[in-house]
Length: 304
Image (tube, rainbow, N blue to C red; front, side, top):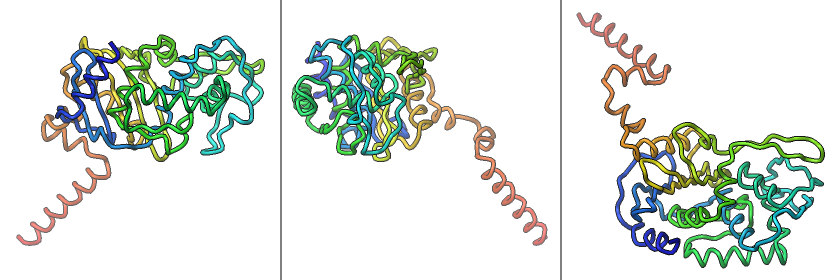
């Protein structure tokens, strides 16, 4: 089934699809049942993918069939020295591997992802070798992954390749479950720490999300990958390099609206009456517009 899905994607990715005005710079919406690309925007551009990387990390870790209850020490070697990102997983914490995997996927913790690679059988080099083999197996021809977290801008891929990765990841029940947890509390050295899913659409009414992962770095922008069900269709959604979280969420909402046959937010504005459009302008623009009208009336009066 997985091979058929990937083959269908390969055959359909070059076909034209309905154009939705995405905020994201690169996007693809792929219907698994029909093998059709429903929506796309510059889907074959090779770009940084940030923490979307962690889906690959999770697959490779689970493929190794390690003891998921084995305790892992979080070490100084797991601290981010690339972007100096923060983490609520302290050095010295001892956690079961399954919890570390959950923190890497649900809350996108970088120390957790680094610890998973470090404790992979054979160490980090063996982990990276397994990643390269997985990329080859999934026929992700335009993908390079050099480390497990996504902090490196050299972790690069395309929206087309990431659809393949998401479709493969969906076959792992642990990944589907952990990426769609809304929140959890974890004992960190005797203190309960609350973690939430980085995708605020998970658990939201009207959304049937079966797999999720967000990502952000300065180079990659705001990214989102989801497998979800809408209008009786199982689809994979990839959004890359949105300028901010609002734009990323607006794209996701518009995709859902489009799949359900509802007007998108942009379409609704375009179809609105002229008076509604005028009031939709930012306050500063409305004030400037009103000033210009007043100036025209004054000019007309002076001419009279």
